[in-house]
Length: 226
Image 1 (tube, helix red, strand yellow):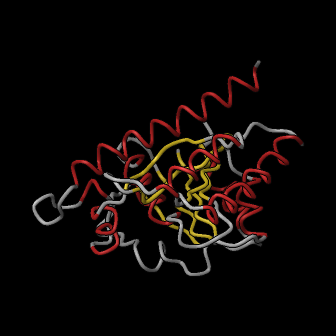
Image 2 (cartoon, one colour):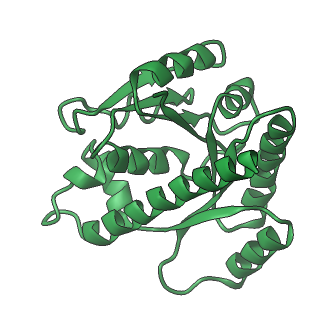
Image 3 (spheres, rainbow, N blue to C red):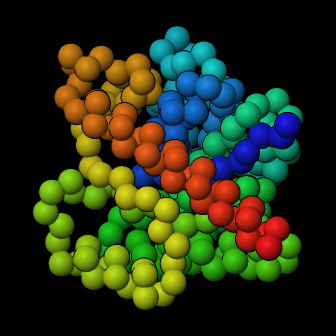
């Protein structure tokens, strides 16, 4: 059975694509063989996070660019269960190729007008590809959301997304545990709860996040059949 390919895509940096890729990798590695394709020129996952001795054994890492990303995804489909693709935060061929070859496109965004504007650009790209054939699941993942009080701008941005018909897949809170994955070069599942506060809540949220992604893929497949 071919792997499911999930691309985390945004045309701007700073929205948390890399962090969410690491979060999902940890969840999926519990049961599946996971390949992460770091297609960001900064290589924060491949060079700054991935340590084979610290991450679960089921996680592998590879680098790609706009020339190699398509072939690497195709190879990953044959040898893994889940392929996670982190593309650079710009409107580039790498992003376009990652989206084109994905089964599901997650669009991380902070709850701000600039982030929503960029997210809607990626939504438009996915819709164009789907119109040409295919049923890529897609949607925005609100990221770095304060777990308590939210600003008026955040509320207005969320409403604007709904009014524009932008699919929202999940909302991920701002948590120290997510940043700690990079301090310790590992996944949430391997963080020491005695050293890192809030790991339990982050793990619970990451599982719900993965479930929301799975549901988005199921819903997209049902639409194609219908």
